[in-house]
Image (cartoon, rainbow, N blue to C red):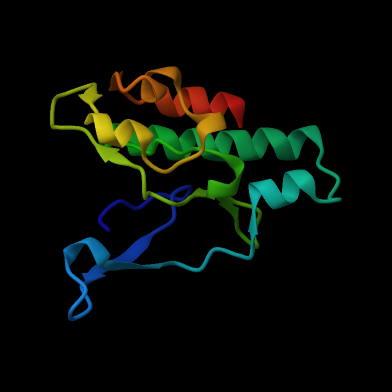
Length: 149
């Protein structure tokens, strides 16, 4: 909630609620975030909208700036793909969906993911090889996914 950047969706609040009689494994998470717009990059790519080279360059730059900011704060997103990039009404890209993200320990450039997390959610076709193999991950995993995007 403390990370603020033009190209990263702003999280206002996050809570976890465990309904009575359901147990911890059935907890429900809610995230309140800024309203960005009604389109994501995937909808734009597969829609009928004509996109010029300048617009693609601007979108790519927005995503790269958002990733650089996250990585400078030791956050690895781990699910970069067109559907996780919202496009605002002002045509600015913002990275969203931090459900698979990982906060690296202070001073560490990589992190070993627990074996069960190598099978976590996220998009198989956009995952970096080290994530698929359950090896150490770093911000390079996001760069790989960004390249595919």
